[in-house]
Image (cartoon, rainbow, N blue to C red; front, side):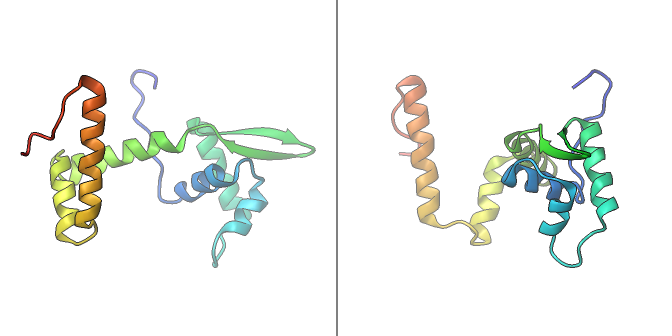
Length: 137
C-alpha cells in the first residue's frame, strides 16, 4: 500500500462480487448479476461496484470482443486474514483466547474441535523448535 493511503476494505456490497470472482474465476458483469439471489441488483449497479473494485486494485479485466471480463487480482486469503485480525482487535481486545472462549461459551466449537486445534498447535510448535508438550501438563 502506498504511504498516506487509507487501508482499503471490502464494503458489504463489494464482498459478494469478490466472492463470485474467487469462486468462479473471470466473469462478465451479466454473469455476476445472474448469480445474485432475488431481488437481483441492476446491471449498472454491479458494473459500478466492479469498477470501484478495479480502481481499488482488487479486480482486473480483459477485453473480450466489445465487453470486459473481470477477474480477482486480490487474494481471498489476504482479506480473510485482515478481516479476522480486525474482528479480533475490535471486538475481543486483540485476544485470540477470548475468541475461542466466546466460541466455546456459545457452543459454536466442540471439545473435540478444541482438542484438534491443540494438537495442531503442538505439532507446529514441535516442528519449529523440537519442543514437546503444550505446557498445560
